Length: 576
Image 1: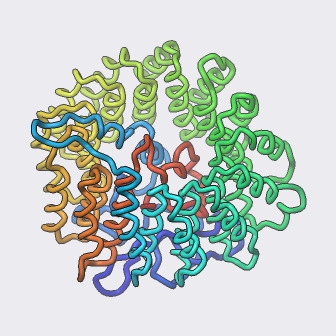
Image 2 (image 1 turned 120 degrees about the vertical axis):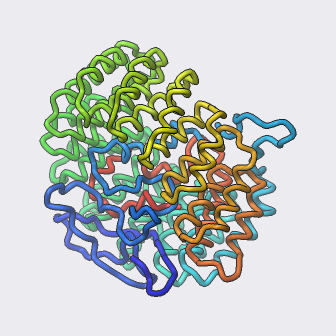
Image 3 (image 1 turned 90 degrees about the horizontal axis):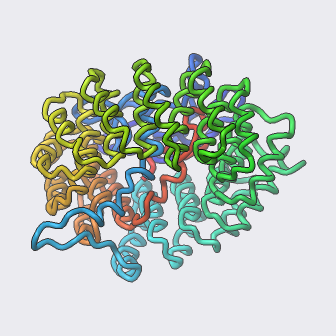
């Protein structure tokens, strides 16, 4: 929603579960005005498991719901491949390591990350100063950025914000940032918030999730104790779900026996069981494959969906029973999403060395309808088998549906076969669908087809779709475009639309190295700048420090059954 006046605000907050099984009203909303409150909307009767669609009213010139980042600017549809890709792409895009490998033009400096000392000297003082900003969204961006520094000395500042900030949304975000900091010393603060029954449920749920991502052994113990015996009966339903979900975030095999026993106990609803299955998958213990296989035939749709995803994480090619179960689900399950998740998981299992699975996927591709083709193509791309390029190219060349064509392009790029780049570039030049052109731009960058750089630069200047801007900037960065950061800064300065201006800053954070920091600092501290824009500049400073395969915040979305209407989770599209 929009605050009156020119200031657009998007505030991350946490809610109680938006399902008919929960009575409690929630404080805040996915988008809310500072200090306001609302009740979580109920899921659509036609789909009781779908999350809330991205709220309206935050738009660019092209008219779609939009915020800076990679999220598709289309209404949520659980059977579309774009949403699985949005929740999971980071591990396969592998952005920051690939930027370090991008070609370097003669006379230009290579991509240079921050050293820990440089982070402490340049970024930390500026971000600490942002914690004193009058705007709550800027302060929320600052706590996330501080967490991304992964510096122990940020702990007192995050702890103080988690306890003392006057705005609940900032306290929630600071609590989550304590978990993202991965500092074991944060465990006591998080535990105190989690067990405080006078605190709002959304804050306690945040603390549960933060305990999970913190990863300290003691944190897992806090969550298990809360779900054990009589203690669980005293937990609000929201906190039960958050705690089960958080155990999966620990990725600690030591939590697998507890989750297995939890599933065997009676009295748990479909969402609790689905999250326990998901958590077992995230832990990745093959010893529980039989439990996941059994869940794949459960009567409850959320449970089957979670099981289909979980087996993609846990199973390996020599787990013949798991492979057969996934193939049966991919063919026979009455729920389309379960079939799609099973197909994707077969591709993931095949990536560990199973050409026979890939051969069966190629055969399935030839017989599939429009809804299944993109998932099969993606599964083949995830498998990494370059021998499947002819089938993917044939699909791409023949496909008239732009969404299916985009999935085929992404799959081709995942195979890293540069010989396919000319086909993709020809399609890029002819395409009119913005989303297709965005995915093609990234694919061309991944394949380092530098001949496409001028066309990508033109698209970057003309488009106002945040997702298109994001993927196009990534494509140019992966090509080693030496001028990508100054180009983005100039576009930011020239643009009038607030979402697009913020999108350019977000893209600088995604593709910039340490030399981009002064540009973002200037935007974050600029007098008279909109608070929304300054918040995205502040968040982007933290993004410059994401040097691992996946950004810190991606842990919430990866391998999650996003079709459940669980709004206690961060609003994953809009998390900085």
